[in-house]
Length: 150
Image (cartoon, rainbow, N blue to C red):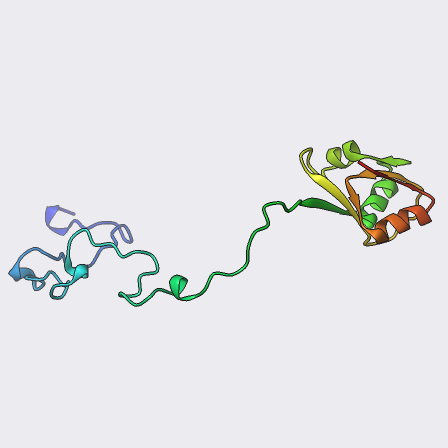
C-alpha cells in the first residue's frame, strides 16, 4: 500500500454524482443541469407545500365543511364490564367513586366520567359518576346497586 493506491473503505462514500456548476469542462456547465430560466433555475427557490404550478391548489378548490361545537362536553367512558372486572379482581367491594376510577387509571383527575352500558354487572355497587346512560343506570339498579350523579 502506498499513496498511489489508497482508496476509501468499502461503503464509506456515497456521493457519485457529477459536481454541477463548475464550468464548461465538467460537462454540466452553463445552466448547471437546471434547464433555462424559471423559478426552479434560481438559487433560493423553494416551492410552497401544495403548490400546483399556479393551478388553484386542492386545499382551496375543495369547500370547507363541518364545525366544532365550542360548548361540547367530553366524557371519559367507563363500561359496566370494566366495573365488574374491578370487583372480580378484588379492587372494590361495594362502592365505586371518582377516586377509585382515577387510581385505577380509568380516568384522570380532570376528566368527567360517564358510565356506559356494555357488559353486565353481577354485583351490588354504589356507583358515583358525572353521567350515566339509561342502560347503565338500569343495569346497576337491577343488580341492587345505587346510582349517584356527581
